[in-house]
Length: 229
Image 1 (tube, rainbow, N blue to C red):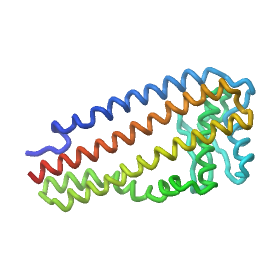
Image 2 (cartoon, rainbow, N blue to C red):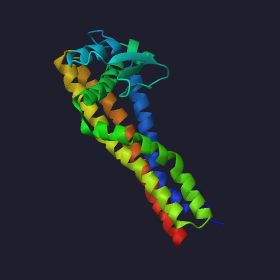
Image 3 (cartoon, rainbow, N blue to C red):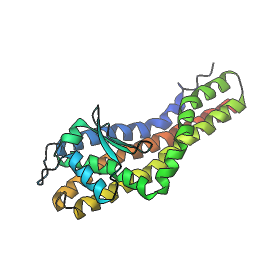
Image 4 (tube, rainbow, N blue to C red):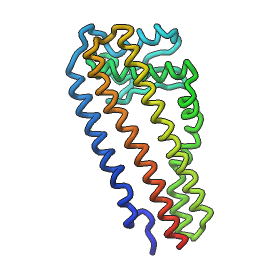
């Protein structure tokens, strides 16, 4: 019997797994290091976020705290920057960098940054693809249905597309705020260099996610070819 998720093709995922583990360790260690280095100006992440939002005329964008660690995100539907307690209240280089990055997404939203618009638009389709692609592929293989196999692959392709679009969105948000932190004198030159290290480590997790999605798609294509053969 053919087991689509337990065969030699799983080796295709190995580079993605290695990079994902490295990226996770890198972001954790980098955040931990710079969460202990406090900014000279002494602003909290929440204060820095509010300062940047007001400077860019985004007074209607609220800031709220959210539970969890490194759970920070920007919600474009409600126009809320949600920061974890450590980031919102923290005065470290890491806290300010993370808070500023999420504000970068709010600025993208406010200026109509197209990759962010595109990513937000395809989220519903991506969620469907993420939930149904593997079940469809499995059912298609079990019941010898090329149509269902193809449908599973097409649906998973939307996940890959989402991850690819996420890369410029995340890189752009970080590059925007590094200049803003300098212009508003929220951080000094050395602090900005340290913040860049925090944001670069975080960006690596998105690179790993994109690679993992691509390798999963490649594996699905290999499995479907083996199924047809």
